[in-house]
Image (cartoon, rainbow, N blue to C red; front, side, top):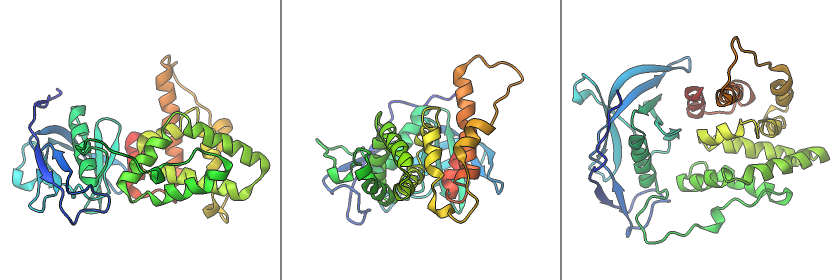
Amino acid sequence: MSIEADSNANTTEMSVENGTTGDSPSPTNRLVVDTTSNWHVKIYYMNNDGEWDDHGTGYCKIYQSEQDNYFMKVTREGEDPQESLESVSFLDESYNRQGESIVLWSYNGQEVALSFKDKRGCADVWKAIQTVQGHDFFETESQTEDDSDNLPVPALETLDEINSKLGTCQKLPSKKAIAIRIVMTDDFLPKLFEVFSRVEASGNEDKLRVLCSICKSMVNLGDLSLIEILCSDENYLPFFGCLEYDEEKKYRESHNHRNFLSEEVKFRTCVEIEDQEIVNKIHVNYRLSYLKDTALAYYLDYQISGSIMYAI
């Protein structure tokens, strides 16, 4: 049974002081973080085989430390509150969100996932994490976005700039959020892959390697929704085509990803599946698995690999 949370929860405010991260807002802004709601969750740990083990259910609540920072505490049902699971600081950059109901992070060298029964709980916790990290949830009268953070429109002459910006934003939460938003706009990927088609036809090896680096950096942004879009019916062929020009695999056995995924893989069912959305999801899940286990098996970090495993 789904447990509803109190939607009329109060909030506490914390002034931003000196000593926070470089991307934190100025001291005139104030963080608004909900420290009253108690959200029902399922708890998962990743085992040594890369699979998620169910560790029961519990309640998740945000706490404020004496150092004016925030973290989550998860109390399993039926356990002593003194033995609660405490998350890392919200200033830590290891957090990821999957879909509308799952938050993941690394804890003492182990991957942890919370699946919220109420999507509002996941949204509130994720908002708090991004607020503390300096994302887009500050109470200001107006916010302007630095044009230098924007990715240029994909074109042959802008590939190097796109590659550079995607590579440098990985450890900067606010810049990473901007990059994800831009990449997931309606026209960025179609234009990028149109450039790939022209570059591949011309045989420009240098630009093909840059395109491969761009695709790897997009995956490394760690946003599962974006990775699923890259593996969708519309994008998977040019996406995996870019990955065929991976310079880091220059001296290894080359992979013709597109031929394998479009020609060699055969989808068969024992019973007819009439729902096309289910069929599409099966195809995307297979491509996600192929991306994790083959195309970028050597490249993905443990956390992104774990997020993809959880989605599959």
